[in-house]
Length: 218
Ligand SMILES: NC(=O)c1ccc[n+]([C@@H]2O[C@H](COP(=O)([O-])OP(=O)(O)OC[C@H]3O[C@@H](n4cnc5c(N)ncnc54)[C@H](OP(=O)(O)O)[C@@H]3O)[C@@H](O)[C@H]2O)c1
Image (cartoon, rainbow, N blue to C red; front, side, top):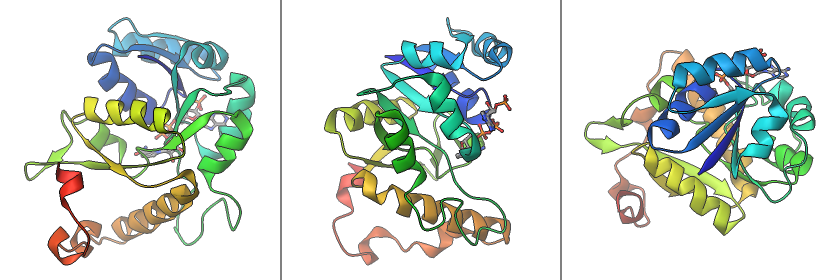
């Protein structure tokens, strides 16, 4: 796949490096193109770096990996993304994790979709960048599940493939309308971590949760 990356920070680094190793073509874009070029050089594997617009034009799939405050500006600089697959990993949260920066309005993912015209899939926002650097992210022998929220079947299929490339298991998180729940759940979970709690301890094994747990493991 040709993957454009908007942003040259930790998430861009973690995910792009994994996908480059899997043979995908990567072009990083940043508001400071020199930072994008430096990241591309560090990643190697033929990755290149430049402007936000170059990365956006390059990608069949585009990863949005900048701070929430910068999203609208970055999407403006990236130019039209109509119909393109846009992965939104942004988290509109900040300490003390009591409210979201989106307040009572649309989710960050919905705002990115409205601003770009892209087929947005919310993904990869739940875990710390260090987890996305693991090869593979697996704990206790169990691969990490990655919930995806999106409305477009083709876009979801592409992102599922990229999740599998990391050695993770894609989880059906429903339509883009549910992305706000995923953003809120992440903020709540990070708030627990910061308070010194272990959020994974609050989830009972699947057999106690009702429903059919076989889908994720399968
Ligand atoms: N770090 C994590 O563990 C993690 C996990 C899941 C999701 N996320 C989300 O992923 C996104 C990226 O996080 P990160 O950890 O990669 O951050 P980061 O390492 O701080 O990098 C942030 C990137 O966003 C750009 N940026 C920041 N403010 C901007 C603005 N106002 N306008 C344009 N560009 C701006 C930065 O550009 P410059 O370099 O030019 O400043 C940089 O390329 C965030 O939304 C974050 O919530 C992070």
